[in-house]
Length: 220
Ligand code: 5GP
Image 1 (tube, helix red, strand yellow):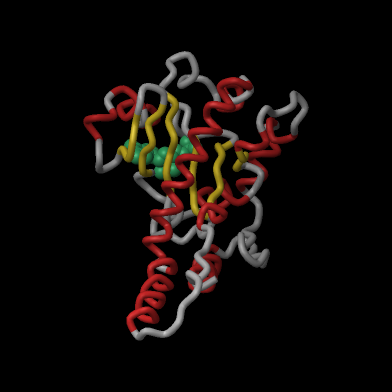
Image 2 (cartoon, protein in one colour; image 1 turned 90 degrees about the vertical axis):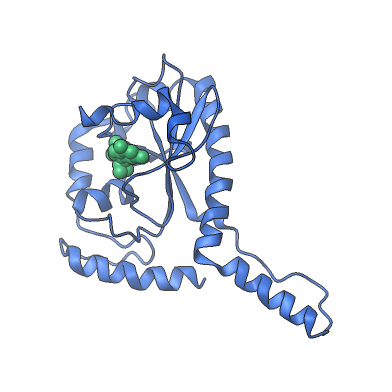
């Protein structure tokens, strides 16, 4: 069953290191999403056998486990942020400018400001995951990817269908638990993550717009 595809990384992380598996220990495996929906898209996989088969809603309602996952997720964001910084290059450009300034023997008394790339990430789960084993998405906000190919790909990350870790534990009556509400989210009209512009069901127009926003976002 392809829905069990993440189990192999949980059981034998060493086998997939370092191509898919980025790091692992007894408790967690951090991997690259094979079909990334943004510039950086990682998955954090808890290895605990009493948790990994649970629905994320249930697994993450355990406060001790949630705290452990949060701590690991923050560490993963730091790693993801440095990878994003390398990929979109702003930091290295400002460093180069700084080095050039020093070499030209101008007086430079402070480092150029560098961007906090950790702020560009979202961490959470899908209300109804397609993969069976517990996984937490760590995804840059840009949604700029060739792998982003249909409505569910976009809306599952840009509506309440994406439930941030900080929303846990979920109250019993939280609307995000409601299946028909969540199915409705997947069918919503497209809304740009950055400027809020609406695109109806025009996927091609959304994709063109995401390209433009990506350019502006990386220059921020
Ligand atoms: P969800 O179940 O929360 O909707 O997302 C599952 C995620 O797993 C998707 O983003 C998908 O691209 C990713 N995925 C599916 N199969 C594989 C796989 O075999 N390997 C890896 N590394 N990622 C996968």
